[in-house]
Structures are given as structure tokens and as C-alpha cells.
Image (cartoon, rainbow, N blue to C red):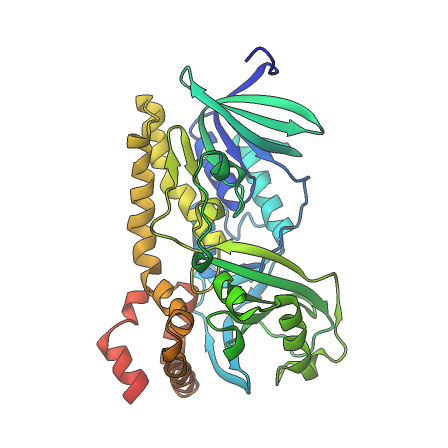
Length: 419
């Protein structure tokens, strides 16, 4: 240790000031713990994202006391979902209304949303160090975990009782702890661009299920005025197998998709198309080690069907805090103790994502079933047009508002395929 700088002490060291890190930080700090959050980017960094806060995420924000009353980042209301295929719009469904007149969903740029959460974490007592990147795990001894970080070329040393990795899909913390993974079937590759002067935008998220990118999909999400976040996401193994260039596919989608191309005649890109990776839920992934936990995207907790990551990020923090509270109380930060977090994650997300993981794999892993899947999707869309109650169930299934097991039953299959 002689060659290292003097250590900076804290009780909880969190790497990453996104939804997972800020949620965990504010909850721990509100219980009187000293929390330091390291964020490698500068304040106001805009993460590549779909920008949608779905109903589940808004519910969690309300539970945290960060709902509409405290929301100061604006946001564009989203009240319905529209589904199309190669030929045009096939179905439409309205979301269930939010509580107290709130919008059931919002689109908010990630720089604004993350800034909102960082402000809340700071008010709770967290110290956020911007521009500081986690570099390595030095060791675990003396009742602490020791970590190297870097700020503007200068090395810093941190000593904490617990290290929490909330630093995204390519987590440096996960890599340092040997908890990374490379399962292409549990990874989504996505691209998005912002376009202004898009005609026909409503308070609706538009989804496009196109045969070429199944089990992925394309989207058009309004972000205010006549500007939209337009993108597509496809499972990584499918991209490799089909040799898909997602940037090229997105440009083709914008220029050729029926019902959309005509609305893009006067549209222009706001910035270059950008891509990112999403780690979807993997029941086999290890998310804890002695004096270490992984949250959110670092723990691969995005929805396998939609790729939504904000909800999984905040929910994982809520699941981790009771385990951490017991660890601090007992002084036991062993793997045997912290594995209770893994069990809590499995108990919640296995149930939540069991069916979506299976459904998202059907068109790709079982290619002989792809015609059947496409036929079934058209049946779902047809029923959604004719039956508003059925459409609401489908919208609730996709957004997670409705427990997915309620649709995965004999009655639903009978109505869908024989009704």
C-alpha cells in the first residue's frame, strides 16, 4: 500500500450515478450511512437510451417520494401504444391511467432524468464525484474493500465496507470481480437517433415488429414538440448470425416503413445515430461477491422482451438495500451473506421475466416456429383492434403493468387463436 495515495474512507462506494447507483445511494444515505458515488462522466452526460419511463418506473419513483410532485425535469406524456408491421399499423391500446391524474408513462432525456436522480441523491447525503473512473479492485482486507480510481490522470484510492457496481453493461466493477459474462443470447444491440420535424406524433409510443429484425423491434417515441427518438434493438446473437448492420437497418426503416416514411419527409437528424448494448435478465448470472454487489445494467437486469432497463435498475437497488442493512448491522459482508441479494433478485425477476425471455427467444432460437410466431402476432393485433379490453391487456403485458402470467393461460390462448 506504500506506493498508493492515502485512502479516502466511506461506508458504501458506488460506481455509477445512473438510476441504480443513485437509488441505492439515496436509500443508504437516508439511513445515515456515508456514501460516495463515482461517476466517470461529467454532470449532464447524455446516455444513449430509449428515453421512456414506463409505468413501472414511475410507480417506483412515487414509492421513493420522487414522483410528479418533485419531478422538475419536464417529460412528454405517453398514454398509449401503437403496434405496426411491414404493412402499417395493426393495433392500438391505451395505457391504464396513472394515479392522481398523472401520465401513465413519460419520455425524458437521460441527461435530464439522471441529473434529477443525482440531485436527489445529493440531497439525501451522497457525495458524488464526477469525472472519476473506477480502475481496479486492489483487494479485500482489514474489514474493507480497497479500490483504485482515476481523476484527470491522478490516482485515487478508496476504502469502503461495501463496493456496489452500478456502472452499466460493460461494468468495470463486474470485470474486476470476475463476474462479467459474454452470453450473446442475453444481450441486445440497439441504435437510436433523434429526428426533428416528424409529422403525426401523438402521446403514443410506436412499436414496429419487422420480420427481418425479429425477435427485436423498432420504435418511434415522442420526446417533445415534433422531435422523436427513433431506433431499433435486436438480440446480439441474431445480429451476428444475420450479419445485420443496425445503423443501415434504422436508416432503411426511417426511409421505407409504410406509414412512417411519409411522415419523415421534412424530418432531419438532430445528431448522429448512436448505439449501445443492453444486458437482459440472465437467471444464471452471479451478482454478488465478498463485499461487492452488482445492480442494474451491471447485473444484466433489463427486460428480455422490451430491453427496458430503468425499472430493473431501480428495483435491484430496492432489493439490495435490506440485504445491505443487515450486513452493516452484523458486520458480515461475506458472499454467504450477500448471496441473499441474488436470491431476492431471482425471486422477483424470475417471476417477472420468465415468459418474456421465452417469448423473445421463439422467433430466433426456434426458426421453424417463426411463421407460427408471426401468425400469432397478427392474431394478437387483430383482436387488439376489435376488442379494447384485450388491447389493454396486451399493452399492460408489454409494459409490465399487467402481471404477465395473467395472459399466459388457457383462456387467453383460446381467445387469441380460436376466438
